[in-house]
Image 1 (cartoon, rainbow, N blue to C red):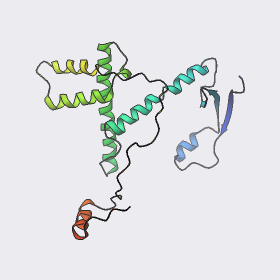
Image 2: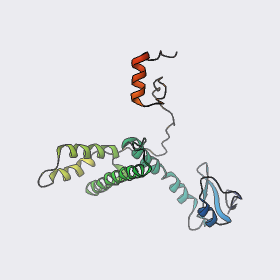
Image 3: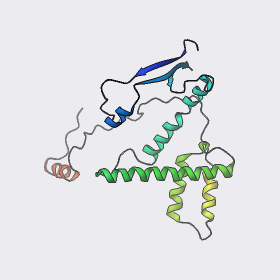
Image 4: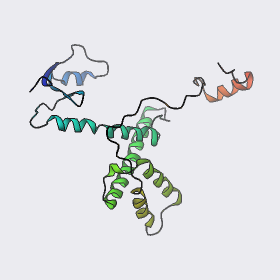
Length: 204
């Protein structure tokens, strides 16, 4: 291997990180051998140490595929609304997470069936478009013979996403946020305070 593709031995930290449980820390090996390589202008670190079995090109392709993970997280948080949980009890919050994951998998299953009918890849279909179709079907119901289900699969395959390789998006908001303070009390208390004192003056 050249200087841009070599093995590195990482040692176990002497002090347990705060985010790691004691059991997991005790089970971790004392050393870990990883492979460090440079490809596509980036430095990748992986436990796939054999360059003959996993060449640079395969790792570069795998790294580019991570964009699908970002898209799935966006679909969960933004499209489905998982960005803010409504439950306050930990047990109910876990159930809410599972419900969102179940809804995500159901939409993905519909997209997979639609892609099979349209002879394309499921990733070529729009998640948001499929979700909107499912919500419309839920609102108007399913007929006696389930013809709407077949129409759903056909319509879901009509909306394709563009093939945009090496797409880069800035992590910034285009629209400016409203200049309102954070609500640090219950809404009922905030309403009562507005009734007594009126709305606060706008800060320039």
